[in-house]
Length: 383
Image 1 (spheres, rainbow, N blue to C red):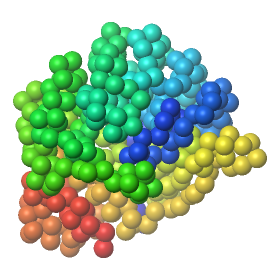
Image 2: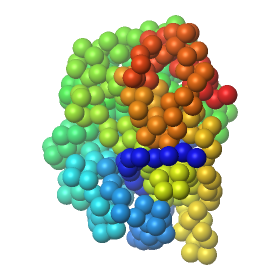
Image 3: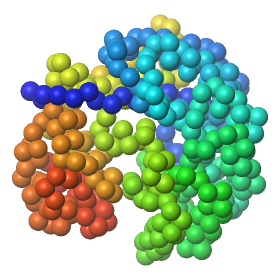
């Protein structure tokens, strides 16, 4: 049986599922708001959901909170404040707790950002994706370049020193110059964190049924390499496959996922991973996906609940930890899975022999080759 000797860090994810319009590449649990968002009813449901899950995490301290969606910025600052007050009355906050809210440039202004800041949000993630109008239209975004630039400026003026700019590359008909132009324009605002990730075509999306013409592989590779160099030259270091930041602004919430920490999810379709150190088990559960079902008082909030096996925990730890470019200490594997490092053998030795993992005694870190062929490396731990 797994044995846990340390406290596992705990984050809270809050899912706000409505958006103005579903993007053709989006496979998240998001739903177009056909009328006004039922703020008050949904906020009350979130807090009831949290109440039901409190026994699983009683007495533990939160290191981060993340409002994701959907488009969380559709909710009013008053609603966000009520949620945070409700959470704080039920759970302990760490002294340096990070509280992030995702914002769509087409749904905000400076007054709204000021309200979110006053409500207790101390980090924004601004979903820009591109700063070229023709690309934004292809992506189905509701904002244009001017809205995006004003959103970044408004966030800074509202007092947000910690914010992320979300950008995509490998867009339909995108050239290297297009991609670097997006980075240059965004970095004029000196964002402390940039999420820069490649567009992928996911199942159950409009793009999957009607695929756009994406750049060729050699163009994608050049964009990736040149973009990394440009971000590094602007003091944004890659610490995860798609995340670049000044050291003190690495996202605590996402790092907790990648380091196989615990997280509680509330809201329609939210997922949780909770470790019971006394019983030596890790449990995953998910909430019902559709907002109508989530808001139905006759139905349970919980859709699924399973205890993950030792084999699954090994794979999931490596799936997450190997996304971090600097890797993780080998001791973290035991701390987060409750298993000895020997549980990774013989695959660990094989991955080092193939030069996919760095041959270091006290760290689990993908080599440059391992980063390039990360899927192949991770799949080795699936068997």
